[in-house]
Image (cartoon, rainbow over all chains, first blue to last red; front, side, top):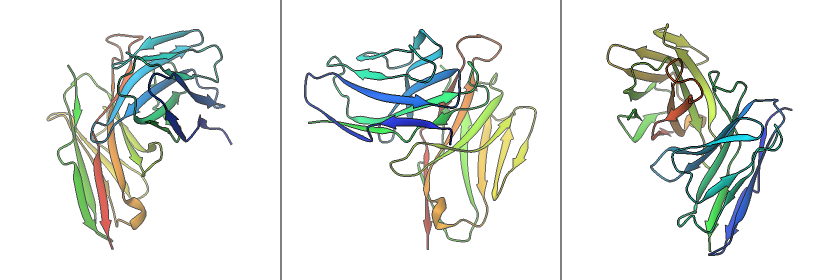
Length: 114
Length: 117
């Protein structure tokens, strides 16, 4: 089955650590996105990539980094510069670069700082 | 800047009744809207979409209405079931035609729908 896979489902980070969240899709979608979800605040865009080897900052990119070396993969690194990283992280992809046919979401990674 | 918002953060509906979830948007240039359903601990799932050249679109037990005059979107769920309990998001597609390369979906805060048995 085609889909978008996020791993791990739960992740714990110590203060000062960098952690990387995985996002893989086998839908042959062009664009991929990372969102952060906090209670009562909906979805906020962190980074997005419309083509391989290119990505753009979203609304809350500070403290995060991404790479898009392969079409199928768009990992997100939460760096120590992100002061409040505890949240639910969602990865999405769209069939076209513009996202004009909507997004397909992964099942999310819940990151907790301990 | 543009925003997509919801009138009510929570909605409780008796099982079997119909529910209506509302959404206001502010970007009059937006021409594509999507409703997503998110169950606890899961990613959002596509429910139904509508383009701006339509006023109404129906799916299985769901209907989306678009009123461009007042920039209002609604999701109607008929004969609600316990499995309909979730958070529902509307999303607005912005940037198309006016700024190619900067298109993305903008999501509202969400409405939590609870079905009462």
